[in-house]
Image (cartoon, rainbow, N blue to C red; front, side, top):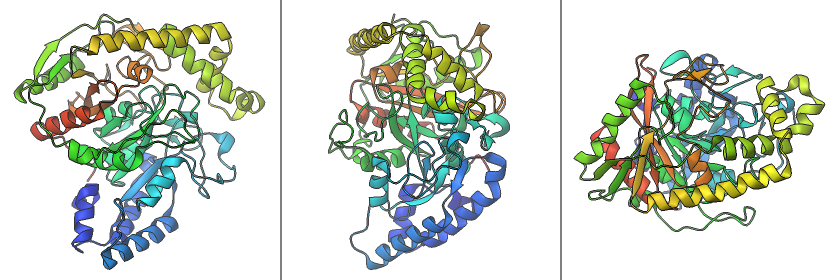
Length: 466
């Protein structure tokens, strides 16, 4: 039975096609596992049992007919509870919306995943409006790390990553405005892929639309490529979305021999624990074994937190959520309220300057990357901290703010480059550690190729729970 919990989406599809497994059977088993484990993990806010069984029966009928079978037919999947779903509660991790009527529309990616035949198991936990890198809220409390209870699963897609690591589904959708796919994937030992900006349409718009991305969280690289092929492509409701006809699954199979790779253990400014530095350095050097040329570098580009990320993030949250939190302040997370209040103090000129600095930052990173096919960094500078803490108090003696402790993730939300995290080891607590793989502008394919090559020579454990 434990093998069934951890089957990949591609394995499930093959077994369905060969009629060795039934989508209804698999769905019932996973719903039962969610019922058993979710009270301890808090990975799911809402479980959609009736809908899941209905979709599983439709998928089973398609496989029995043997024709017109959608790509993801019968694949058990979760959606992050920031993603609107018609007729299904969407809480945004907020008491303000806990009892709100379900949305009357689907987000673009929900329609695409439905059309591809997924079985929706439910909506996964998130901090209120996705404001921080730990997944805890005032509705259900914290999501726990499946590898060690009491420690954070990361955020803001922590429920999604925990569900994947615990075998509570085969595919998960996450969102990433400053690292929210890569942070929890790193802590939970899953594969997290932040696509190029605009590759997956975002409708409705995020509060931080100039930094926000939607993407897959999975247990294997090939599953993520498979899922992204369904999710990607332009939609007129997102004017910044872009078209693509790439089959990412096929493209991920190509060799990476000869690639020029930059390895930066600190980007020249980040404080990193010795343990994380050692684990990720060893992982980065694996690419030499794969025939790549790896060069340790300092990009010479300053930390964009103070002049760009903090101003854009906090002012955007203030603009979108200030009225809700002002009018019903007793229902809001105090940490979120503090970020909103911080954002209120910035002027229009401050925000305009931050966006101009964002453009300059992009150009600096673009010039640096012209010498390289990929950039490698640690995904995070520290190991997982206690669940329910908004953020670690300090990193290597330095005081932190709500998201500045993730100095390797948010730079690539600014630039919009594709970035993935691959599991590359375990810390002293037995909690996973991630290596980040960053590609050039809109070169998602090379990130997938590198991720798949690393997975082949350094396979990661995927069974966090029995």
